[in-house]
Amino acid sequence: MATESVDFCREIESYLCRKNDGHLIRVTGPSFDLVSGWAAQGVPLKVAFKGIDRYFERYYAKGPRRRPVKIDFCEADVLDVFDEWRRATGIATSTLAGQQSTAGGPPPAKQSLRAHLERAVTRLTAARASGSLDGSFDSLIDRASRELDAARAGPHGLRGDARRALLDRLAILDAELVRQAREMLDAPALAALARDADAELAPFRGGLGPEAVARARQAAIDRLIRERFGLPTISPG
Image (cartoon, rainbow, N blue to C red; front, side):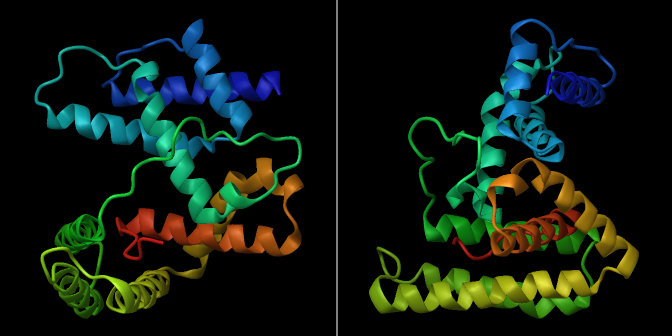
């Protein structure tokens, strides 16, 4: 475990260096303890990278950077992305042998359905504009936009049966989105994503049954497909 933690910290240090345009910020002392804690919790390396990316996105949005970013600044984003990953794969609700839940403090506040859909439509539109999606996604984006209009209905949004019906439609739309994206990938690309998913789940397999592993693996592959094409999760879950 000690060797794995050291290797994990080195990978994080190298990635942070690249994000800082080559400026090396050492992961030592308290920072090493922090990042080693991520490794001990089972944070997949690519999930940690995604959390670092999320911090840098906000940092760039504030204007010209004045100083290199330390890894400590990225902690909240790394743990947020890890929590999202665990919920997406079902790891958060599974009993993990020899592992404790890493969710500390109160759960993150849920955003409104309207805000969720606005973000989803924005990301879909950006993905289409980037050229990563072909014309087959146009109707899906249009349908997501219509569902956003439905979510805006009334001064307090949808409630009761109308809200449940909308959530059901969003779940179907979400599954269709991932299916279409999967069809854009050839067999070698899908195999590479499956290997990445297996690597992400490796620390947790000992605490999961075969069915839970299969569900978590498929969810991890779907998440990687979304990430590859810049796709949002349309269903709020």
